[in-house]
Image (cartoon, rainbow, N blue to C red):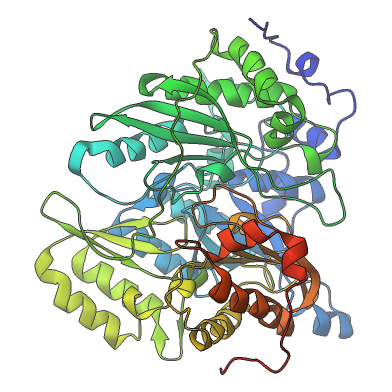
Length: 583
């Protein structure tokens, strides 16, 4: 059995040479830094050190990139603003919490909400002067932003569907909540800065020294993401998680989990030492031991992760470099026993949970498709007002999905006509009226809010989907299940490297186009063509779609076809320049 040292520095091979962020964390006084003082300054942004620390508190400093060119021309500096992210385990929130977030979207943000690919909610465009009140208001409705960003456990994902028979999905939700609670940072600095403004004292004398029993002074080398899935429904993309927990159900009862470690989508263009990676099955743990097992994996990552190069600091690189057997052997020291081999179970299904579904307790839930997670009113589509109307009228529990959609839960069957009437009045399409490709598409926000974005994503994908829909109709493939995911940079927040078609921002108006994945997320796609202008993305895919129609095998999806053909044969496919599609 591997011995586990109690010294993080001694166990961490990257500790001799550390990135600058490591020093900022270590000297942060449990994530306080000088954030409180910075908030009092009449500036619109934070110092460089505090800019890193506020991530742990659930907010990113950004700028309005749409305004950048004109402001530069006018000799005016950047227009700084902030994204604030809620951590919502399993995507589960009450009607009152949703309405509070909706109100904050108008009061302090840009008039929209954004459902994330990790079942959270983001506010965009918050000014520094409103940041403290925004975070305080989120906590007032019993949500939190602590740990929604930063080098800690992020939002814990779980299948959102409230199917009640056997109680397995309810157990997944309960486990997600337990993990989120146990793995959250313990610093009191969050409450001091954003809520009551007072340091916690002992006997009215000196402030209590914070203890981070799990994370220590330097927290984790990089972010850490956990998700729980079912074999028949991998809606959370268990292979994309740093820690994926695949439920093992026997005789209708949840007996335990296969522990998968090392998923991660991030990479850097031109840096071949970085790459997307699928989580590998490491071991099996009984359901009663799952929180302890999660802590063990995090402690291993804390002690052995790369703290010198943040581009290679995710746990996936430990799994890749060590291999599964060494990782399992080292993990044994943290578990205090030799772990059991994983059970021979793999994900085999996937569900968007859209439309009407019985819950199994006499109630119903209804899944509404939210294109790219953006909840706003625009033109004939008044999604934000329509959702608010439904939540005010029916007071449902809401659950956010990993595909950026929303489920309205605990509905009476008699509510169906009125719900569908409200949707129609607000121009909100029912899921059945949307194409399969649109329902299965997803993007990250990218420009104008994300500072890492190289290209457009959220604002570009709807038009690309329009073109793909036209191409599929012209080929008679409109009923084909096809997943499309787009990101503005290679960090892969919308998990583009697992989809049938992945579109990744490369530079300005050019993208890398990937094919060969699958909606179940069990394999990575591969690069078809690099530096493709946005206007040529669908034209690049059209020959593949045409040959797929003619050459597919029985039951073969588009991603399966591309995987079978391989990149060299796909590139060599003949192109009839005269054959186009009607838009």
